[in-house]
Length: 235
Image (cartoon, rainbow, N blue to C red; front, top):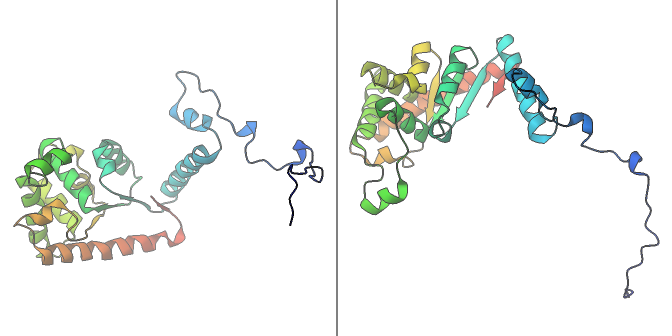
């Protein structure tokens, strides 16, 4: 096929702009939320577009689930904890907006360190240079020993560690998701892959106990998920 040096456009068909279907309309734009208005009004003022629309739908779904007694399950990693959101999660627990929390191993580590000293998140680059990365003694010993003790009583990973924090009266337990969930009697599960967490390098680590405790939590988690059959929210 031979092409002209200049592309021909005379066969293009146009149509009136008003006939086109559009995904964004001014009716969906953000509204100005004046000072001293409620947070509810602020949320309502967000645009009904993309993330704004999704966020409002999420808020409504969570409220609906809570009012109807359906489960609200929070699955999270370490960054929710590292970014300082524990007080919000804990407050939501107390208000009935949390039916269960599923953490990974890193989430447990950071939550435990917060409970112990009110601080967490070491400098990885610096720790690798000195050989001290992941070598904090108390973090590993408390978690690993809690799990070993817990499996003797058929406890899951999350509950075993939460109970340990309460037993030792960790000074910052009020900031701990694990300790608060055990106190409020909300299921907390931990899902570990052996070898992915720094505490697995310590001599106190017991692969059999870690595996058994994590499997117990998996079974608990599966039962919680089954409750979503009639509605609910999984985050």
